[in-house]
Length: 218
Image (cartoon, rainbow, N blue to C red):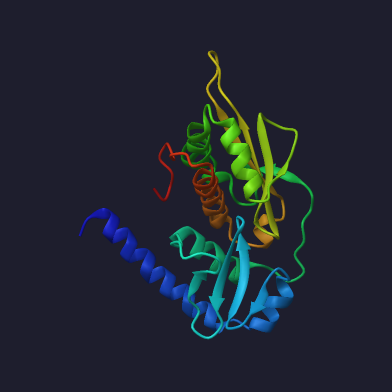
């Protein structure tokens, strides 16, 4: 079995484990904890980076609600982890921090810069206009930082700032991603990496540009 097939097999097993965990959850308590969750027929629905997903209430599988496109492993894990790790009475602080200042994220910071921020910059180098268009399609709200800077909701309870500075003859393109300091009240710290990665993948998809660089899940 090659590496990609082995990884997919591992993801399938992990997804099945999390599907079982979802079925153990008190769905009424879950809706109170995360008001963004809606009931639509047999599904609980939630919007992740501008795309609506449904989690079957009795079987626990996840599907895209408004199109038939594939669902990435990262998206699937983000949704399950949001449901499992979000805390009662959690709320946004309004304090934006870089990844290294997210609670307990410090040890992962070098890898985050190498495998998230660098690919983000490489992907959109020379494509500021495309990045702006993609962010706006995803419901992003512009901020003043960067040549292109937007607040984009991973989930309603997890806003993120995607900031981009295009390169020139002297300096290469640069990117940064900021989180509300409350992010680990809603999801596991390791999942913040997957959130950032899925946001970049979604931005590239909406911009119609090719992903560049070596991201964690690529």
